[in-house]
Every structure is written in C-alpha cells, then in structure tokens.
Length: 359
Image (cartoon, rainbow, N blue to C red):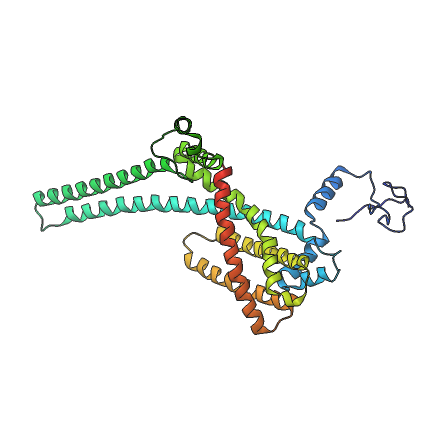
C-alpha cells in the first residue's frame, strides 16, 4: 500500500527534527494527516490486520521453510516479518472460524443422510409390494396376507424406534455435570434439608457450590447438552492459547542442552502453531468444497495432511535445534507424547471450567 508522507521535517508528536520517515525520538511515522476517507480506512485495516509486506514476507518462510522464520526472528531480523503474537491471533481467528463452520456443515450432512435413509426405506417397501402383486404364483389371499404382515412389521419397527427416540429425549433432561442428591428435586429443598442438620454435618461452601451448579444444569432440561457443547467450543481457542507456553516448557525440557532461553522456545511454539492452524485451515476449506460423497478422497487428504505435518515438525526441529536425524526423531516422539498428555489434561480442565461457567 502506498503511503503519503509529509514534506515537513518536524515530528508532529514530539517536535523533534526528523532525519527519515520515522522519528528517532518517539518512533512516530511522518505520514500526511490530511488524507482521503478511502486511504484512511485502507490504512486502518492494513495496520490492524497487517495485510502489508510484513504479512506476505512472513507467509513464505512460515509455510515452505520450516524453522527459518524462528531463526530469522531470534537473529534479530524482525522488521520484515509479522510479530508472532499478532500473527497467531489473526491465523487462529481464521482457523476457528472455518473449524466451527465445518462442524455445522457436518451436522447438516448427518441430518440429510437420515432423511435419505427414510426415503430409501419407503422406496424399498413400495418395490417389495409391487413384486408381490406381480407374482403369478401367489393367490390374491396370499398376497393380501403377505402385504398385511409387511405393513404390520414396519409399523411395529417404526413405533419401537419412536419409543426409543422419545426415551432418549426424555433422558436428556437428566443431564448433570457434578451429580446431585436424588432425594431433593430442587436446590431450595436441598438448602432446607441442610438447615435442619447440625453445623458440623452440613456441606461446606465448595460442596454447596458444586451442588448448586448441578441443579442449574438439571434445570436446563433438554438444552443442557447443547449449552455445554457450545460453551466447550467457545473455550477451545483459550485452551490452545494456554498450550503455547506449556509447549514451550516441554521444548525447554526436551532441548535443555541447546541452552536456549524460554522465550526462544516460546517463539518457536507460536510459529509452529501458526503453521498448523494455517495448514489445517486449507484442509478444512478443501473438505467444505468437496462433495460429501467423496469420503475416499478426504481420507487420502487427511493422510497426506498428517504426513506433511510430521515432516514439517521434523524439519523445523532440525533447523531450530540443530540435532542429528535420529536424535531429532527421538525428540519428536518424546515431545509429541508429552504434548498429547498436556493436551488431554487441559481438555479435562476445560470440561470442568465449561461446566462451571457456561450457566
């Protein structure tokens, strides 16, 4: 984007005499203040998202040169690249936007498949009845008897399925997270019973808080599961952001002989997650474009994506930490197992936090 600079050599912010396009005292750029509305909007969007030379200079090493972006940043060559934190925020925002949209697409696909299954069942019943009526070896009484049995059997199957669905729907109202006392139907009744007990026998503050949350979830009825899933989904980006310093700590432990600072591992952690989010965004877009019937193609795309990610992590490890091939492979396996363990622990914590904060 072309920038319009002032002709004056004094800084409008602090008054210092300028020797270039930036003030060496306060750092403000010597831009023309009287600009058109379109240029002002374009400049604001460019500054916010950094859709300028920095962004495109960052994409090339991030996607195609594993580990180079981290080495460049740690070597002090940072001006031409996007700041790691800003880059992570933007790329993760785009990824989760497509990720949640893709989930909705899958739900719609499942619903459509169930409807198709119902239509197929009706078509099959009509075809069987037609074959029975066209069979010359059966008498009219035999045809009527077979058709009646077929209709009765299908109706009984439909009624059994309907009862099963109704039973499952009725059970949705019993969704609880922490569990509750079956003898007390409401939280007010629980408090009344607690007040009748001796002070030493009453539940403490933490127990009462959990029980109250349990009744809150129970009162949501059939909507409780949907509320919990939506709350969990909205907390996933926060969990992934928390995993950045935890993954850096794993790298600090795994590569302690490299004598790198913790911040250096953190920079690599951010760059690696940025690549993963950006690459998986491309995979998600492909899955949304391809027809739902192309399951085999998507399976091959998933396998290829898995191999590319493994190769990228391996190459970036070798570039950033300068280890031998087999040593890098052993480190990759160890770090992956540790990361998986931390990811599972964070997911369990996220479940608890979602249960406590969603209602």
